[in-house]
Image (cartoon, rainbow, N blue to C red; front, side):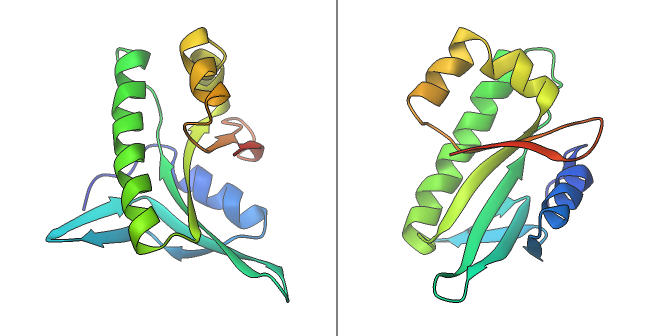
Length: 138
């Protein structure tokens, strides 16, 4: 099992505070002969008619020497998980969870803005200081 990101527990706590139930920690994606480990699986009751909303969450800190290298690695992992989830559990939405600092450093720059404009990924932005979810971007 891979090492957890430094903000893993903070993201997990933030989701629980918003009413999510953590169902898997980690969430295992089995595909072919491979097992991949997304950081968290969670569900939340939307309504009696609509049932549970399910998400898988990959946590990334963006604390490497290069934010661009961190972004490239995160996007590669996100794309792989996204494509497998579409085949194995299409009702579960994938999110990349990052801190507000990483959001400001990467996604408020043109290279990150283009990803958001093209709707390449879903984001959960967690306030690093308060441990609360600041923004959902889907």
